[in-house]
Length: 579
Ligand code: ASP
Image (cartoon, rainbow, N blue to C red; front, side, top):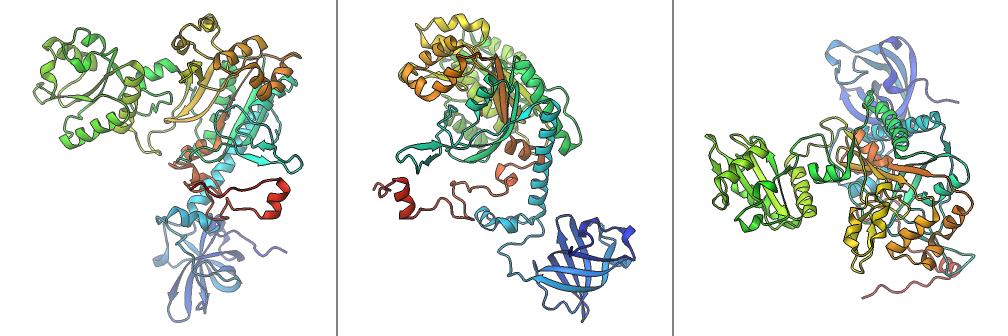
């Protein structure tokens, strides 16, 4: 038996005269004279107005089946804002299918509600237009990605959830083993090792819409569990992987915006850092970093005696007040700068800066020329070592110009040639920028031999690449090391000894003994992609049942204690919290 003949939002003038039954929730109820009431009924497709007799006992969020005749509304009651605003269901009879207590927050209209309350009553929040739209968009994006990967002849393979630790570098969530007390599974941070094993297994083109778990602090763009499009392919280089992923994200973007993004441009990591001060540049706006080191090569100004000087010009930004400038300076210092120099160009071309007196006329005119600064502009300058200067200016650039999430269109960007190592730790071991299976750039293999100075290793480029959208890192990937000798060399450099590497990744190294094809892959975060495409700042808005900022679930109250029997079965004893 179906209760309903039509969906609320799909009724139209074509249905006038038909007797229909619609089912849904009471969005609004308004009295109409003594005996009649307007009831706005809502389902997943929209809202229809029903004119109901004796509606006194009908309240908001009651679940109703309404049967009546579709008719044109009297002209004075037409509502142009509603797609069904020119019709209504008249002569309606109502069956109450379920009563409802007053909801803890208003469901129609976009009212700000405390997030914990929304998540605690997520089933109510899911009724809002915003969440309905977001989850439907998410489903469209998932199916667009699957369509694209299937068309590109990828095979969807499910990899296990209960595994040994993976090498993504975050903290694992662990699951105690009942049959082997004292031993633990890890939940996958990614299917990385399994997808590489799939390549050894001749799958050739693997993909999975994979749930991944990482025990890291939560942020607007990060949850403990998230969903990735994970893929890997054999006998290809990075170009081919990027082409496949570009195709999948283009299809995903088109499913929401109706438009296919053009060819996704590529920029090297070094150029991204130099021009935008970020390895995930938001290229929706300018304010690029300008090189000034040469301008001040003979400077007398102590603050400018540094190996790198760079600046940002804000056109027509000179009317900024002293207070705001002081705040920007404080921020720059909190990001690691020693200070922030600013210089304004006045209405008649005169220069105004507290440190202008330390610069020669030549330096000032070279500076203005390099920055193409004109009347009304302001220049911000940072002097430091290269890494810190670009880092601080990169953050300043975002502070000065970042547009809201839903403005400026969608700018995908590939960042390629990442360094193999991002830093050297306190023990002198280089820290991998990606995971330790990333292939170094072929031209830089020689540099790897030169371990005399670990800092030289920071120059080694890798065959790793990231996909960036509007300043968010969507994902990363790389060409993998498929040769045991190079892999062992990298493990050695990272300070991962034979024993540790055997224990952690022995099964992969063993697999490589039996004929491993050259392979490469990628993974991008679907939560982030969906959030950006629907214009949400926070990925929680595109996840049906997210955790709150503190990592707990106000709805189910997870994480919760487990009872003594379960603990005993697992051979676990819980210590009292440290005081
Ligand atoms: N496994 C990596 C990650 O999840 C992506 C990749 O290298 O394919 O970040």
